[in-house]
Length: 238
Ligand SMILES: Nc1ncnc2c1ncn2[C@@H]1O[C@H](COP(=O)(O)OP(=O)(O)OP(=O)(O)O)[C@@H](O)[C@H]1O
Ligand SMILES: [Mg+2]
Image (cartoon, rainbow, N blue to C red):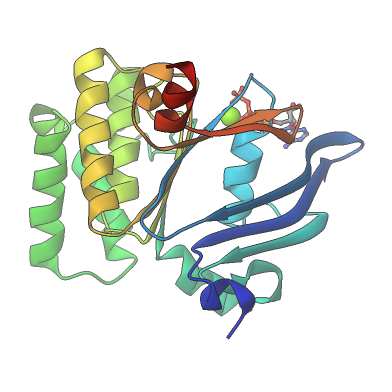
């Protein structure tokens, strides 16, 4: 058993550094622990390193320094097979969506469940529920290429949530959404948090973290500059 699983930590980064060739220091000395069932917001200006941090957690990128652990497993030490197993427990909503443009909305969501060998009845039910919850019911048979940005964004979120993952990584999930869709998305995330999922959300949208009571972590030039719980900061102002 590793240190993280003994401490009941879902995500742990220890002195993580990431440099993109030739010399872009995207992250420097990032140390961070996230508990199971916690919702954490990553904020910071464009280029601060938010996406890079999320990409390290699903091992699209690897760190140049330090350790990244998910549920007590050090990612750098996992075999390819173990990484694949772990990825099935992670739902990532990408900043650029990464949808299959020629496939329908329903196919894009269903495929995520087919690769994890879910039953057909579950896939049908889950796809319908997610489309309904995200206001996309009438778009089930549309090609994702024909959708608006905000609709595509919601498909990306539905796909990330489809397998009820233990870890949800959402990169700017409300960037293209109006207030009503934003509320729907945040309500869904909150339901997943309450069933025990750990959720990291990179965002520029203060409306989703102000007054949320969840931890907000600000990145600046690849370093953590601020960590606050919203209710604590409110307490200080009073
Ligand atoms: N593949 C890459 N190759 C080279 N540099 C990169 C690459 N990806 C990101 N960077 C650089 O790393 C830094 C951090 O980028 P990152 O995408 O993590 O920022 P971000 O906080 O997500 O920004 P945004 O809010 O615009 O999405 C930036 O300086 C960026 O230009
Ligand atoms: Mg980004």
